[in-house]
Length: 193
Image (cartoon, rainbow, N blue to C red; front, side):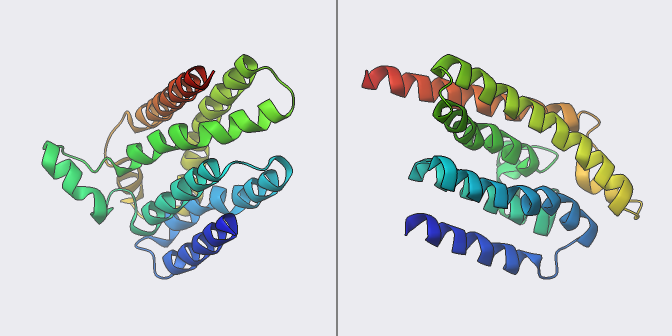
């Protein structure tokens, strides 16, 4: 029942945040992967039965991503306080989401490979490589999406916030989140042994 409630919550959020987004082209670009990969995630849960925390983490990540797509990551008003508090020039919600991708999606990948009878170490390695490669591919697809969907001159500014290193930083944040998830998971496992 817990997972079904989370799925209903996710669908309701997606519908609500699809209504009148700040920039329709950016919304379409950001939602392409959600629309294509979310059904795959639900199918994988039926096949491998993720634990409730893993499932919650993936849904939590997806919902936060939907908010960023609706408002655009640059104008994510619910995160401006953080940038102001630290005296930062840009809104770092985008990179926070990339960090959460590594942190919260690492364990589902680990569980998938571990359930396929790979060793723990190999499952950790494959999950880490998946996070790294998906992060890189996402940045490539984001670039292609900008070419296809963003016709306005300010579109590049909205996606990268004028940061020429935005792509590299996004991948580094996902990488860091995955490393932290790996360390937490292995530490927790070692303590339980």
